[in-house]
Length: 130
Length: 321
Image 1 (tube, rainbow over the protein chains, first blue to last red):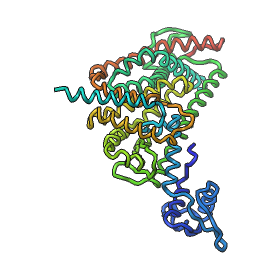
Image 2: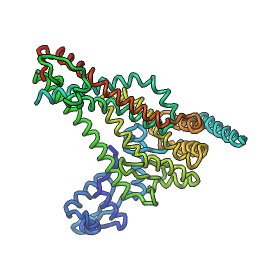
Image 3: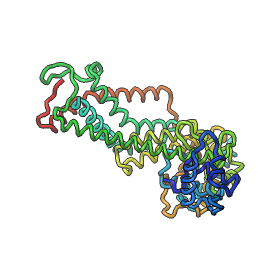
Image 4: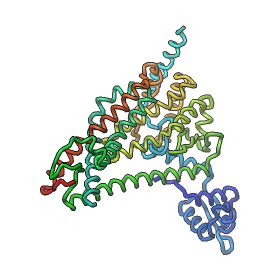
């Protein structure tokens, strides 16, 4: 499975924290869209999971914890893309997604140069054609 | 009832396995001709080829157990009496074994489908939150140069900002290629082919399925080339391959390509696009007719073969109607 995969609620909580860091569970709960608004205890356990995954930091403010994101949106996306590249590479995602070019190191510089020359020759041929 | 279901399950599984092995063995003989076809036609035929063992085994076994169709396709013959009959395992233990085996295979297929679906949904959910919609595609704020189409029925195109910034001039070609995947529902095609060949261990079917994947990519390259020209697509492929390879940190340590020399083959295919053969309508019809004849002629030998196997397997198996 993707090591950096997150559930919908985990992403919702992170989204709330990206928009406004340093919130407690209650405030996060209120910022999650009403359609999928979870209970406070669900948000607390989600925050606990995110903390274990080292995606949020927390500090005690009074009786409650205040949470802040430990990763930025682009950092998380970068990790996720990295997972995809690795899974694409060993074929484990091939029935879910199609990628334009694989990351396989299957061509060396000489092969790339040969292909370039081949394309250039074809271009010349087409240029000469009436 | 158990005997009928058990016989059905055993015949279907046995035939599926036998046809799958046969198709893998015959494939090297057909491969050169299939790869000479225009990739759009080649990919459709290859998909049909890999789906045929599953579809033919299921259909012919169903026909075998449908008296009106069975009477038409199986030469009349008598056992205890001369009525129309389907092969039947007489031993409840053997029939039960067939049911258990078929249940295991169907469960395995279903499990594989569900886990892949779950993974696909998880990825969709994440990208929906993390990505930004840009008309018909989604942009992902990540440096790595990556573009892909995700999903089966309504696939979406995701493109990293790293690739967009590095290849602004080639963006249209890349999106044309991905749109072709979207319209052809290639991920779904690959999934169907993979599930239909799931009865064989992965290393046995790997080569054929890799060909299907390769020809599918070529079909999308050719679709993009219809709008932008073969040379432009070939140049884009090369540019992106260079870009990807210039970021060694992206490469897994145990580098092993699942589509070896993929880009090289695709570029060469584009440069020799005019040499590819396009099938005409009558040729498609002839192939369809051939498939029908194959299915029709399968039922008779299947009936007698099953009866022979049943009598050989269960020493006391009696054939009843």
